[in-house]
Length: 466
Ligand SMILES: Nc1ncnc2c1ncn2[C@@H]1O[C@H](COP(=O)(O)OP(=O)(O)OP(=O)(O)O)[C@@H](O)[C@H]1O
Image (cartoon, rainbow, N blue to C red):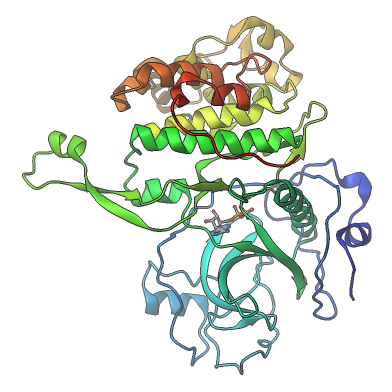
């Protein structure tokens, strides 16, 4: 089967009426059948949008690169035992060495529809698999060698399940639109190519470094210095402004979806930590050598022409209008940016919760009471979070004492920032108060945030074509 472009592909694969629906989280759809034969085609883009599930996938970024030439066939567990916990070979095999340019033997996907591969194998005759870089809800991201361009690339191999294949086509569409307008290519990850291989949509990207989340984690959740946070914030807001100018809402901004362009880092003394420790020796922390970042993961991106009602964003970065069912639009991205900036300054996610009422109580603890007009408009499913439609049902509605403690221990925004930031705290607090305004119509827009005094004196990146 060979298909010429995305429009055709989509008309074959998608019931157009289903484009507005949100795809539910993992599982439940093992029915997507394997295609009869392997087919590979390169395509252009179409204008369709959909929603997709998400997760907090967290994997190592500094794993050892390509393994020595494969000799024996192992199952994933055996490989993990041989290689130790820091090397990523999940759902992969070592196989007998295969002739150059030859396809690996056909193997069934794993039970979740993930492509089963061996390091060193070909992925089409053009790409050779070097290592596994990451995994998300949608599939695996592999580091590969592009034989044609003679460069290392990152290839997202999407699970062979219909809804993920649909969502991948929408991601490709968005990526192509972004690439067309992002002249310097420095805001969002660049798509290089895409193809359909053994029923897996494969998206080829430029290879980037670790995510800001990966970096925080590898640094034992020690915060970034404020000047670096300022630079990350500026670039992040420029990328968001760029997307909003194109009428696109990312909807899943989080540290996992912000990648450093380079993996290089330096070790610097951490005097703050040293002063607090009882040890004589100086303690060190890692800092990225370059602070250039780019956005990834556009599978949840949608058009901003009208308010949307389904639930979006990873929990910790989800705006109050989404939780209250008030309808959301561009401002939901700015709320996420506010949460991200706090996380980069403090080292930890601000709203660490998995439950709506607790989440709203945390917001009130950090930011003050929700505006009455938002409470009045809460949809039927959110009414239960309020007492007589006036105030939050908290702490009365708390699920446990532990939940009450989690809310109670959170500081006010001002105190939180002052605990972690030694200079520029006043400007940062003011910026965050603008980004975390409850009412989306009053929240700072990306361009307005870029003009905030917190960013004064920091040079802006050059323009883009609309
Ligand atoms: N271009 C890239 N260069 C380097 N690593 C990448 C690249 N793209 C993705 N990754 C790695 O792969 C991981 C998964 O990628 P991505 O978020 O696009 O997948 P996903 O399945 O859409 O995830 P999610 O479940 O969050 O929607 C990322 O967190 C990152 O670690």
